[in-house]
Length: 158
Image (tube, rainbow, N blue to C red):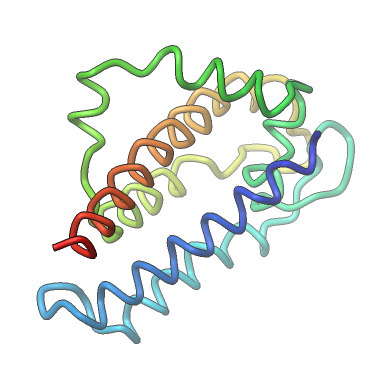
């Protein structure tokens, strides 16, 4: 069940492609080339940061992509239940943006807070400090993907 989060990575890639598509169609968004550079820098940064997570060689991207979640050893349905039961109507309203640029800017701001003090010794303290952020971002992503798909299908049905 641990590999279920590889599907999350595919979803992130789809969102990135969607963001680029939005930028190409909207004059208010950055140029497609600038957006591609921003996205590449966000994604690449974690791959370049070599770490030891629970005494295994890794990189920061992999830690955030799957390893922090894998540490909890929960099934897909257990994660889904936990993540959905704590979302309230206030959260939905505050996360309801369908603008991928907002999502990218939020992720960029978070990225600047996650670099470890000791990259050779990331374990329980790091997990304790950062897993709540990872969980919240998954919750936000679920709401936003739903809102985005509703918007796409509403426009297609007009």
